[in-house]
Image 1 (cartoon, one colour):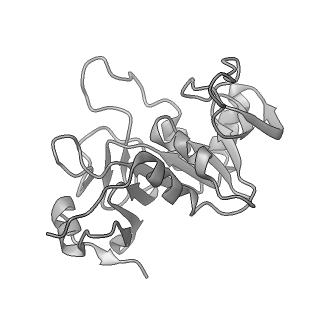
Image 2 (cartoon, one colour):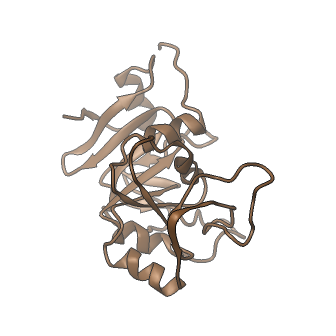
Length: 216
């Protein structure tokens, strides 16, 4: 097996950001996806949405410039770009459910080979008691992308034949961005878009435990 280096969280966020198109309306989920805001390419306009009622978020504020009255859905301080807006939570969910978001980027515990998403519960005591807005985002956005580490801390793949955790959405995930590879969920199965240097296709298949074709 050839040596390879995993993408750092910022490198992974940069990889996701490079695929977001000019003019897109995008929701960034809680956790790793929020980092994508800091790596959007210069020269394009991307309108970031937060489910607590914001359109037009900018990158994270500089240290010491945080305003805790201006936060995202994960209660992290954010900035607001010129032209940004605040609105009621119900209006925010109407945007999510009405198909007005081009892309949502979510974390996940598992993604199945056919694009099922499990990202709200592992069944452990003391975890989040309900699915919350993730369900609305997963099925309401025109494209749902997942951003996560490929493997658990125990070395098991988070991309699985069938999800064993409670589902957030069925066949909703179009792309999975991980620290080792980027994959597309298609009607013809999982397809590899890119792999980190040094990681062979056969080794990626071994890690995931599924056959992977090449992205066209």
